[in-house]
Length: 137
Image: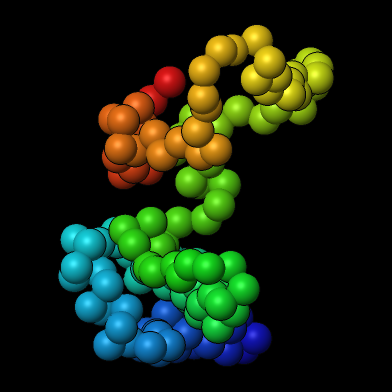
């Protein structure tokens, strides 16, 4: 009899419709970024990650006056930090010789006037920001 009760409970749980938080926003985000999942379980797991990232973004943006910038949800909203690091081929710096690479710029070795600041963007010395996860080392 206990086996029958357990089987009915498992079947009932399996047939239960999952209720997502912020379903309209979730569906819009999935559509905008072409997201689909192989199972209801995977979608629920991704939704929970998305909710956590959404909460982080909202908390940050409430204090954006402190940071000077805001965050927004992007195509990476359903992945964890560790998954993101894996996408970037992130390797831990632990155990590496970090040394002391701090150097103070000594302008006395140079003649002529040096500017107080340099905007390297205007000199085309830096590239535009790339979409994360598209480059491999």
